[in-house]
Image (tube, rainbow over all chains, first blue to last red; front, top):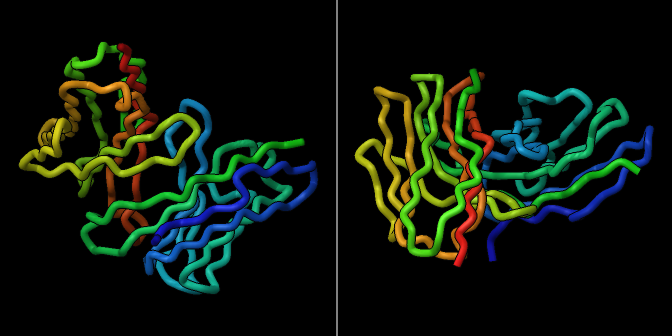
Length: 115
Length: 112
C-alpha cells in the first residue's frame, strides 16, 4: 500500500540532545513537508522540499534542520536550539502543481516530549 | 487577524442532526481550499476539496464564497463516527510554492 511512514510514534528528548524524526513516502510525490501542531492550534510549517537536494524554511524553522537526499525520504532533526520542542510533528507529501490544487497527505505523526 | 479563522466549538449535536461549519480567510489571492478531518491524537485526513461551484460528497457539502472569503462545510444526518475536529485549509502561492494555511479546527461531538 502506498503511504507515508513516520517513526518513531513517540520520542523523548533530553536537554541538550538532538533527535531525528524519520519520514518516508512511497507515493512518488515530489514535494514533502514538516509541520508542528500544538494543542488548540493549527498546523505550522517548519520546512518544505519541492525536489531532491533542495529545501526551504517554513514559518518556524529555527531550531530545526532537514535533508532531502532521496525523493522518498525527508528526515527532520530537532536540535538543542529548539527550546520548546514538545509537540505533535506531522510529515506530509503531495504532487506538485502550479495551481495548488493537489492536497497534502499526512503520515501518522510523531509525538515528541522533553524528559 | 488570523489568516484562517474557524469557530473552535465544540458543536455537540445528536445523531441525525445537520451541522454547518464556517471558515473565513484573510487573503483574497488564495487559490484552493480543502476540508480535512482530524481524529483525536491522529493525523489530518483529506475530507474534500472545495470548488467555487460548490461540491457534494454523500452527506457532506462544501461551499466557497470568494467575494466574502468564506468557506462552509455542511454535514447532514450526522453519525457518531463523524465526531472529530474539522480543519479548514487555504492554499496561497507564496515564496515560490503553494503554501497550505490551516485553521485551528472546529470540534464536532455527535451523541446518541
